[in-house]
Image 1 (cartoon, helix red, strand yellow):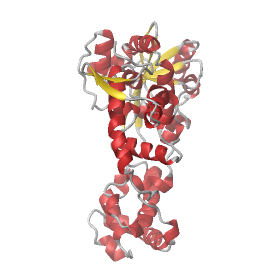
Image 2 (cartoon, one colour):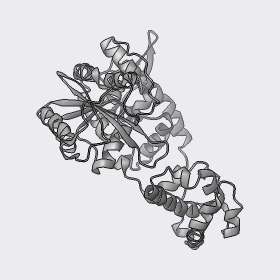
Image 3 (cartoon, helix red, strand yellow):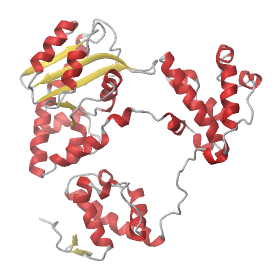
Image 4 (cartoon, one colour):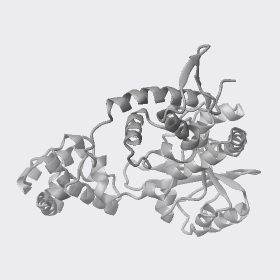
Length: 395
């Protein structure tokens, strides 16, 4: 079946028609199994009164009108589970669209559950059961099949109505500003800017390495990422994580030892062997004071007092989350609670904890401080958990 937009002029006309819209809905289809950068295969766009439009990115050479639309501050860009879609646009533009409204984030804060799927969201908000489609398909094939086109159109066909339902509900619950803040915190340009010096942390089984080997892994990871980008291949196609760990463990690297490693092709050694030897040797000369560490802070764990208070505080957090139809982990991870309480009791800086600012502070953070300061109590009354008279009571 034919795609709606396949020329520069048609794309420019579409963007002109979208000017002045309060919001547009977006989705993308892409392939990334054999490349470093995801290959954009299709863009779906819709807005109120506009049937879903499919854009074929393969013949498009002038993206300026579309990028201008994506960055228009007056037009909200609505997506569901948007992280991978935003990565596509970040790679194109060097920034993400702004502003963004992620319906998955919004749904989690409006009581629909954590990480709800698009199909489940549409069913719960609109009562529409979407037909199952084959999402794991070759979106680069042309022409697209009828099933592919139907699946792609459905991804934005119902999104405008779902978005408006979520906004209406969020306004009733007084959570729209919370959603906007959470979206800004979770989705920003920094999410897609890799720090080369920390790439080693993403290597599987890096925890097996001794402290002296981490500096070698750091250097190898930087080199691997650079080569993968240059060749537009997944990093595993350059060097697998398993091989990286084995090379980092070696006190000295030689061409013979490279050739003897499983997972390294002779052609790879001929092409990159000498350079890898140099990288490995130079990393071994880095002084201990500059070695990276798995844990930057060696501070002691939380005190037993903090651990006990965390158990009590968790009861409060779970109760508040339940009444708000939210998952407690959306407010704070349980493993972070005792360290937060320990830092609070010790008078240390707690600004790193999300519960100290924004909607989390408003919802729970201030109550926790009152609890720790002895300004409130928790009790059971008629089989219900009650805490003083600080604004939250059972109906």
